[in-house]
Image 1 (tube, rainbow, N blue to C red):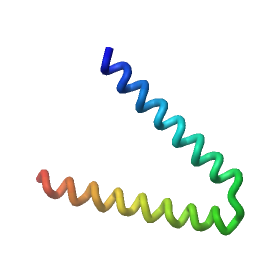
Image 2: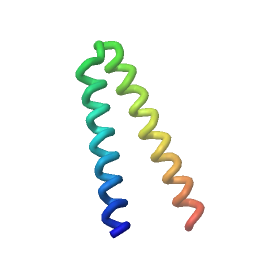
Image 3: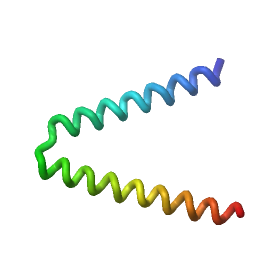
Image 4: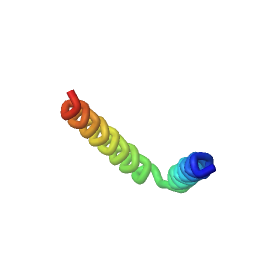
Amino acid sequence: MSMNISSLAKGVAVGMTAGVVTYALTNATSSEKRRFKSNTMKAVRSVGSMMDILGGMFM
């Protein structure tokens, strides 16, 4: 049963995150949207870099 609760919690967290992002984008000004896109791309690059480093550690 605990596995199902964990999956449910992850699903709720993902749903809430998606809702917050949607709300932020719909209520943002044009300049805020550009800044949001820039920050998102920086975060994606950082995560990619981190994954490459972790992958290198395990090889």
